[in-house]
Each structure stands twice: as structure tokens, then as C-alpha cells.
Image (cartoon, rainbow, N blue to C red; front, side):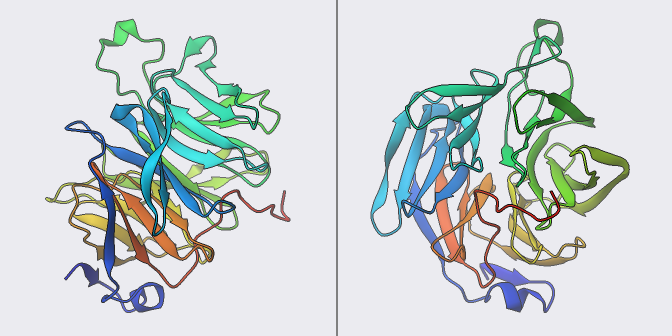
Length: 305
């Protein structure tokens, strides 16, 4: 069964009979992957990264998939800031960048304490305008040839003036996301196969004493925790061994969407009602309908900031 139910609460989120659609394939060649899906609500389309082909793709529901941009510095994760501008985590340039309306690029972060970043992987924007991103140390080169020898999770202040290292003890920090009220930051560690949660302090840093492993998605089938998203009720959606998992906010496993593609690299809510769950895999783009809307992008300003 493509959608497997582990707890009765899943039925509120998705029907086990919901069709799983394959929208496009052939991305990334033998290396893959397709990554970083991002719904662009004003245009009614989805952007996503075709990393190893060094291009950004555009999918229009019912209208097919085309090349949106070539030459992206092999960007991975994509999001939007509060003004609606595209923000990308770029592998080749080893930076996080903002793409302006006039076609220019503003560098958000490219170094930490004078040393170049590793390979920024995924990025999100909080409703106060601050930017959080992961920077795993996944270089094929010897450690002595790289500037940083640790994997970091960072915060950039809303004015882009301050880059803060939040956590440096992940092996491969990958996807990250906030709870709906932004009081919790979730970060997954693809190498360890789990997701950790941290309380967010008023200044945007993390309460390290609150650090805990909330979800483990290891198993015998292909797939690791990679990109993650939450819906407006706090349910957590993430890739893992065998497919795309759904957990509640406490980490209780509710179900799995077995879409059949190799691994789940990232996902995004979209559609006019934010109830279409798009997902990328090594070479594919797919979607499935859900009953609870995802958290919108750009983020909506919260009263607690």
C-alpha cells in the first residue's frame, strides 16, 4: 500500500487511498538529486533545484516542467525572504545568496570568522526576517584543504550584519524548519538518521539545554532524513528509510508515503490552499494531496517578535 497508517491520527491528515502523482523525472543524471522545492504562490508554480545539472527547474501544475535558470552554483535548498525574494543555499560558491528583482545577487553569508563556509545545504527564513541555514562538512577533499572542519547550523540577523554559529556538533546537518509558532527549531542529521529539536530563545539563538532527539527514521530501506516541513498544526513531514514520513509534533509516527522513488530529498507545501505536498527524490518530482495546509512561504509575521 503506497500510504501506510501507523496511528489513527493520520486519517485527519491524509487518506491512505490518496493518489501519489509522479510529475517529472530525469533530473541529476546518475548523481542526482532533485532538491529544494519551493512554491511560488503569486505565479502558481513550483521551483526546485536540479543540483548536478546546475539548473533551477519550474513546474506548472497541469503545464509541465521547464528549465527556469541555468548556472545556479549548484544551488540546493530554496526559500523566500519576507519581501518575497528568492534565497538559495549554493554548493559551488559556498554561500547563501538572495536574488534581487533586478537580477543582482546579495551575499547573505559566505564565511565564518574569516573562513569560507563548507557547502550550505538548506535555508529557512523566520518571520522576523532572520535567516537560518545548515552547512554540512561533506567535502571530498582532505580536511587540511578546507577552511572549516565542522558542520554548522547558523543564524543571520535580519539586517544581514551578524552571522551566529548556533550548533557545531552535527555530523551532516541537512533540513531544518520551525514549529508553527517558531518556538522550536528542528534540524535533521542525515548521517545519524535522526531529527533534533531546540527551543528558540528571544534573541534567536538556541537553548542548548533543550536539545533532544525527537525522531529517528533509520531503517533498512534507502532514504535518510533530509528536507523537512511542518503543517499549520505542527505535524512534521520528512524523508527517511523507505519513503516520506509523517509525525506529530511530539515525534509520534503517524504514517509513511511510499512513493517508490529512491529516497526523499526534500518537500514543500503548495497550491492555492497550501494543501499539495510536493516532494523531490534523487531523480523525480512528485506530489500528493493532504488535508491540513502547510506553513506558508514567505513566513507570516508573528506577534511574538
